[in-house]
Image (cartoon, rainbow, N blue to C red; front, side, top):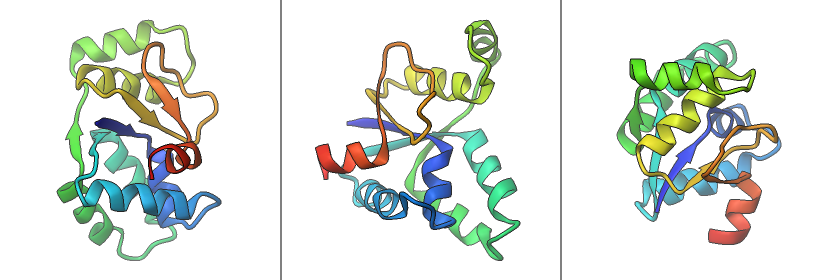
Length: 132
């Protein structure tokens, strides 16, 4: 199964936030190739920007992410489609469209307002309960 992982799942993991354990289980399942994990290129940049303020060697973690996940970027066409979605969160729009473009059937996010018109969404807790 192709699953798309929202940035907040990685931040839960490395910053040890509320859903740390669920994020770890998900990350491990993808690392073991139980699922194909997809992310947007902006996820790597966002992790670096947000986490390096609190984590000294964030690059080591990003190297693991780079080896474990399939990373895709937005094209001009995807950006235009994201701008046309009637939703104020452009990052969510881009991630949704990248997931759709890559045939992902599920998006894992702990963002209750994440936009996804025709892809199922589960929180990391719901994913753990259903698949792990």
